[in-house]
Image (cartoon, rainbow, N blue to C red; front, side, top):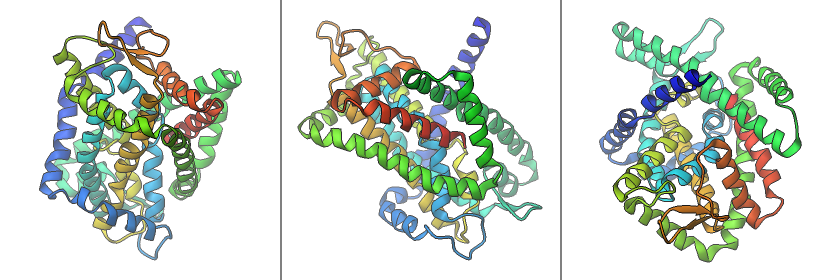
Length: 385
């Protein structure tokens, strides 16, 4: 087991290492500049198109543009918004949130490009359903000489679906149910498998219908809870933002270390957690957008880029503010390290991420951890779907 864990750690460090992250963020920056910041300038227009796309049109496709975004969001709005944000702060300090924002702002252009290509190069299968995504726009856009790359994406995308798409999410649900309701892990596994099968058997239309109802509900419920805490501590919000911006460049981190290493740690955590949360450039979202009922790739691209904004700029920021303004992190004046309220150095495991967020909400709303538990379940289940 130790060897298996060591192998996974080595692979993880390589995949989420500086080179891959530089490529993902670099691509987003290149597209942002090439599009002349269109993904930021047209943000309001994108929300207008999203509202207009709530109802399915007579255009080609399987699901409405709105449900296409909700399906894509169901894969991104997950435990990363709760566990990932807390983990980023725990390891890299509040400054990591700033780098999450930067990743999201350039990631919007990446998500725009992914959705545009997904609609432009999609295909209709033998059952009359629309299929698209990176494997299709690589094959149809770059030509037969690149079919091997399309195959590799499909292969590794399948493997990733069992990892970050299912194993991580189901483990989070099992942990929450066991901790709050004492439900055995194997029972959780059976229930999740049955519910997932019930949705997936219906294909993209049932997935889209489920996501169109579940994602707005769970996201709004979570944001309302966070907003209540933020408004009740409104006077602390400006200081929280000052802390995020100052730590982004001074490099204060929960794990300590000299300024340079802590600064790099804040960047690495912010970028990696940001990419993990919004999945800009990872290729999952365009598979959903390819099924949208639209004949205009650009319009769907405008809608698609909203996923990154909603996931990271809105939901992740609210989680971060709740953690910071409720005083769950304190600074040891002797070392400059971030400490939990109890005085112990913040730990780095996934459980501590949930615990940090839960403690932040509980400090303001005593019963909210139960709501948070339900939110984690819904977020994780939607990601599995």
